Amino acid sequence: MIDYILNLNPIIQALLATLFTYSITALGASIVFFFKKVNKTFMDGTLGFAAGIMIAASFFSLLLPAINMCEQLNIKEWIVLLCGFIGGGLLIFIGDKVYNIFSKNNNKRVILLISSITLHNIPEGMAIGVAFGSVIYGIDGASLVAAWTLALGIGLQNFPEGTAISMPLRRDGYSLKKAFFLGQLSGIVEPISGIIGALLVMKVRILLPILLSFAAGAMIYVVVQELIPESQTNKNKSLMALFTLIGFSLMMVLDITLG
Image (cartoon, rainbow, N blue to C red; front, side, top):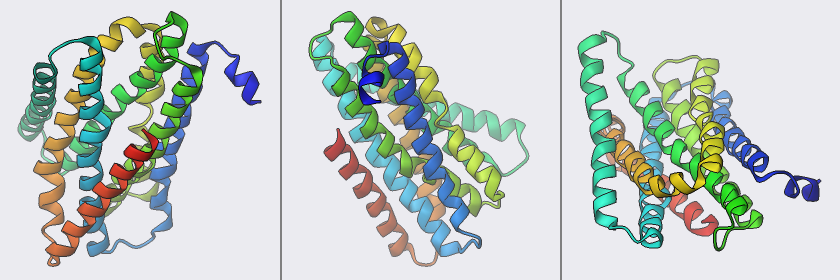
């Protein structure tokens, strides 16, 4: 079976790999089904936990790879990262303001959370697609084994990200099914962006550092604007901060050991 998959067209392999990473996101979102009652302290803790995951992912999964790609492409790292990072934050900022003008309901944090992690998944899917597409184009160091290893690492990182969406949604009163549906929805962009990345590998390779830093800026904005302030409304603020450290540590370990 493994030999059959490895002998498939790399574009097909990119699709299979990103479907795998999406399925792990859905699996992480399914954690919500194991909690029937919503405890405020626990759910505030999940917000802090999600904040830690997103902060770590912003650096280890997004900014650090962007720096490495800039070095390989011989372009100025600080210019690319600055423009991308500020641009990502500004996009969510503008969306936040527009939402406040036109909306009367209380779903702003939900939309910001889903949007930021979805933005984060787009360059991840592209990175997988580029890894497989590079095999076709004979880029130095490219191999199917390396591409599948990257997909495995990103997939395992996606598990807590799915949880990071579904659990806060459950906290806000969403039904189990809707919390799961919206949690897994953020990962569906990975197969789409993976195929695009594989087909346009040479061009996307240049764009990837910008996309990675763009997603990082969007995630940090949501963490600072929504997740940490909300988690700190809990009377046990120190415990909520500890959950943030745990979330950061988990994602950091996954990125370092699987990267």
